[in-house]
Length: 367
Image 1 (cartoon, rainbow, N blue to C red):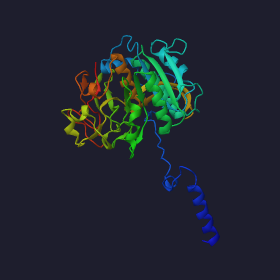
Image 2: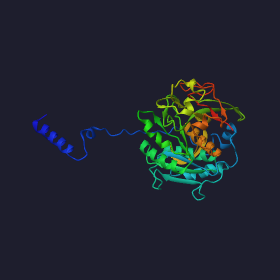
Image 3: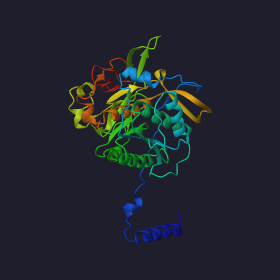
Image 4: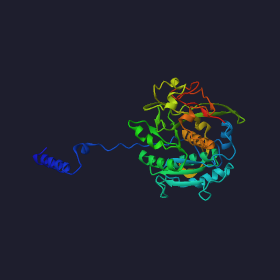
């Protein structure tokens, strides 16, 4: 290096440090690392002109869910990334197909905003648009009396998704999050976005088996895993097993909340004080996927799709919780208020067990 270049660098550093409030430590500080989420959705190939996936009536029978007008007086927020320009009209097609009450902007049931509550929406993304259609349609199917608030983050960055989460938390009692990513050091700093008093948070556990994902691993959320529903040739339910791709495992970074760590079956999963995921589960295998209508082209196709993934189980859990009107948090899930179907068959890299496990948690909600 020439003497002139050395002197130039020394003078530049001296001038930088002469700026009031600037120190060498600041100059050397790296920019915070951004993290990005994926939507855990699995789609059976090919759109069709009529539904081929499970219907709301079939799912309600499988779980003995209430079929009357439920969820009245509550709001379910759906947090996703990017824009689904046909979200409301597609919800209308879904509702008409299955005899559900209309849920529109005009009647006050449906609201769509960006991450700050405005109406300047982000760019369209076909994969996230299908995710959005799934989330709002099945939240409405299971809690048809609830209002639906769709909050679209500007992108799939955690910064934008957490901004959307904050808006959703301030305007709904139940928040469903069908997104997540690999765990990372420092993830617990985001946990405060899932901690508003009186709000129930649900997060898909992921679609790649073990290990645990974030924000599913946050101790402030209900982590929702996946199962497979089995039917005979007449459409009668014959059983439910753990889905091989259900996300789950012991968190690397998060500590179990007290409701989980003191639960009598927590020792079964050998997480040694760490957060165990999932807490609960529901249908997610695309082989027993649900019907979703989407007119925003997905892989060049529009119409009815059969969709699976823990993207299905999270909004349904949020909606079933809205049916109760209760705060469904860890204390509620690990208490005695819910009747669970224990899932004892299946493996995602961890085995299903009698009681709590790392595939289906406590099991699926029945009744």
